[in-house]
Amino acid sequence: MSNGLAYFKEVYDTVPGWVQKMQDYNPKMLDTYTAIRGEAFSEGALSRKEKDVLIASMNAARLYPRSMVYHTKGAIDHGLTISELAEYFLVAYLYNGTASLRTSLEAFSYALQLKGTAVEQPQKDLETIEEVIQTIVKWMGDEDTRFIEETLECIKSGNKKEIQEKILGEGRVSTRLKHINMVGNFIIELKGKDAVPWIEKAREAGVLETDLADLGFICILTAGIPTWFELSDSLKLTNQ
Image (cartoon, rainbow, N blue to C red; front, side, top):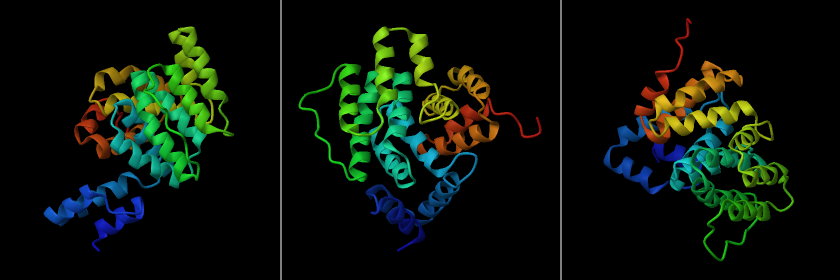
């Protein structure tokens, strides 16, 4: 087995079809991609767990379940808790509404499965944010659901400022990481100009340039090189 195939076998317990096809058509390309991925996911300003869950949340935000599920597994394998996962997916909701949190249900149920808990899928399509959050709370069982239930009460109030402050506030996940998540939501959709105000808010919340650079590296892995163009426009040079 090539190094690239072995790497993905270790990460996912199996070799995904897209990896095998890259190996079949261009083994050097797979080796190059694997090296870039390995470097992007090495421990740095952001931990491996944080990098995986950030990608999972960002992909929920852009309604892309495939990458979301892969990286949910990575985050769980590196120690992410179910309560933390719920808070990250609320950041996806803050960015793109009910559709994002609804999309996250696939990863959420998979995460519980990985932890040995089977969940009952809804019998009907979930249309409202209340239905989606109530489903998550039900699935969480004995896990700490206070943050997500309090968030639902804020959402019911309709006060956008309070909703934002609640979701981005300190919980099982820090305000710093939530702001990094919000920046990433814009970057992977190539909305660098829209990300600028959030980058400033992130800096105010304690996010460092090294954090933003690490975010940019993992964005490359999930949405391509143009994401680095979008983020690097706002990234300060190291000698500044």
